[in-house]
Structure formats: C-alpha cells, structure tokens
Length: 462
Image 1 (cartoon, helix red, strand yellow):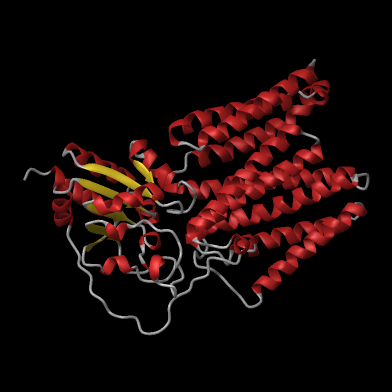
Image 2: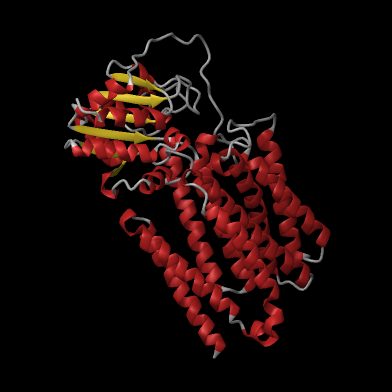
C-alpha cells in the first residue's frame, strides 16, 4: 500500500513540476507556477519520507533527516529574506547547494556500494559527481562576483583554455575508467578534486556583464546532476525534475547567448566575457547634461515615455522611486512603458523581478522585440543604469566588441535621458555612442536619488 501511495505522490509531483515550468514562462501566471512548484516539492518530500525502509526503522531513521531539515531551514530562511536586488546572488547559492547535495549523495553511494556498482550506475554516478562538484564551486565563484567579493572583471592567464580542458579531460577519463573498475576510491577522490577545481577555473575568466548566461548555464548543470542522481537511486521523479531543470536551463542559456551575440561553445568552456577595450587615441567629445528639474520638465511635456532599466537601477535599489515616477507621470495622462533587454542585470528576468517588487503593472513591461518598433514614436526614452544594451555601435561598428548584439533602439526616440553616475564605460569597456547624440541628455548621479528628485519636481505645484 505504501509503495502505491509513494508512486502516486511522485506522479502528482511530476505533473506539478511540469505545470509550474509552463506557468512560470508567463508573467500573469508566474505566481500560480511558484505555488504549484512548491506543492510538487512538498508531495515529493512527503512521498520520500513514507518509504517503507524508513517507516520500518522507526524514529531512528528520521533523526538525521530532522537535523538536515533544521540546518536547511536555518540557512534557507535568511536566503529567502535577502533583498530583491540580491536575487542573482541568492540564485547562485541555490545552485551551489543543490549541486553539492547531488554530488555528496553520489559520493556516499559510491563509497557504500563500491566495487559492486554496475557499469550503467557507475556511469550515471560519475556524471552526477562531476557536474555536481564543478557546479558547486562555479556557483560559489558566481556568487562572489555578483556580491563583489571577487573582481567582476575577467581574470585570465596564459594557456588558460589548455589548462581548463586538461583538468576537465583528466576528470572525465577517470570517470570513464571507474565505469570499468569502480573499486578505486582514491581515483574517485582525485576526480572529485579535479571537478571542484574546474568549477573555479570555469568562472574566473567570465565578466560580471555575462552573469545572466552563467546563471542559466549553472542552473542547467545542477538539473543534469539531479537527473543523473535519479538514475543512480532509481528515482523516476528525480529524473523528471532534473531533466526539466537541465533542459530549460540549457534552452535559456542558448537564448541568452543569442541576446548577447555570444558563441555557446565559448560559454561552455568559459572562454567568454573577456574585455576588448579599443586601443588608440580616444576622441574627446562633449555631452549635454541636465538637472532633475529640467528632466522633470521634459517628462511632464511628453505624451509617451519608455523606461529602459539596467544593472545600475538594481545597484542603486531605485525600483521603488521608479514606481513613484511611473505614478506621477500616469496621473498626468502620460503613457509610460518599460523596455526590458533579455540580459539586463545579472540574471535572466532580473529587471522583471525588481519592477514586480515595486508593483509596476505587468502589462507595462515590454520585451525588446516588442519595444523597438515603438521607439520612433516615443517622446522620451529614460535609460536607468543600462549601458551596452543601448549602444548603437552594436548595429554598425564592426570593430566593436558588441557588434551584432541585439540592442534596444533607444537612439530612435525623440529625446533620450540617461541616468548614470559618470561617463565610465560599461563591461564591454567602450564608450556608448548614445551619450553623444544631439537628442541625448546625461543625468549624472545616483539613480535612486536622481529619480527621487525628478519625482519631487513633478509633485511640486507649478
């Protein structure tokens, strides 16, 4: 009876995971997707706790499980309470913990069952441990870059790709050897150490601007590790959930690469994100700047405003002030919409998350492909902390490191205002042509403070 109950719970949980993924793909149904995913995980955990081998052993079998629940709760609750601006960091930590769990389960299974492992089980176990350990350290490195504990700029050294591929190849060869002779525990430890090392080396040459692709790729690796764990433990639900996670993360990574005009092959081997700073004499050009009061006057006389948010908005935590600006403008009958670039921020959907926290209506958010045709009719385009994703050089300058990258056509708006702390270049290391165009005005300052001053000016009686 228990076995049928467990399989029923697992089947319903699998359906919940599939539906959650479907509903999470659209903003209006995202909340439903989250709740459904939580329900699926709850059923999966309850089903596992009802395993006959656990019930037969009584409370003693659950002691360590309870300890793990307590430890997980102590770690998980503060993570859940992290500010919305830290969602990329929290996501990286989630990948790290999930991948570590898969790797440790695989390691425990190896030391308990070795050398009596079948070739298929050892193959799946090797894949699980390799992906789990490399994803663990890679995710920690991504967290360090996102949290600015580590340099966000790429760290490169001579023969880097050769060293990285050599370490990965050695780990894979050991995994293959263990398939045919799974009794070598020392070799297993060496393989694990190589995987942990490769995870670090995978991330250090990647710049902070490329973190959206990194996050989605690590999500894929963690999912594939979980799927491999399902084959090792003969758990169909783990196979389904891991496959969903792995495949969706892989698809998202490919979408991110296209959005950044990057080669997916380079992403897999950590060979992207290196700065390509132009050499030679840089031409001195003047820009026009404006005060908060002047910016407010221009916005007040507009009929259509397009806001283009970027990482600068996240760093300044300006999303709530942006909401106040949205309210002030809409009260005046001005149409305000938001153009979201696929890789704006440090994770897929980063800007969507921040704007949702500030209660910006979903129907005001536009994807890049939908927003670009509207740009010629926009009176004012307000750029808040976005840099390379608005640079017109991506369309015409073949010598530019961002050439070919799809951008938001901000320069086609009648007036462009850019909130930026300084004229320092973005992560691509190049100047943004947009800032020097005749219709562009620079609004120098912290995004949160500057938007707040604009709101005050709009709210003040004329």
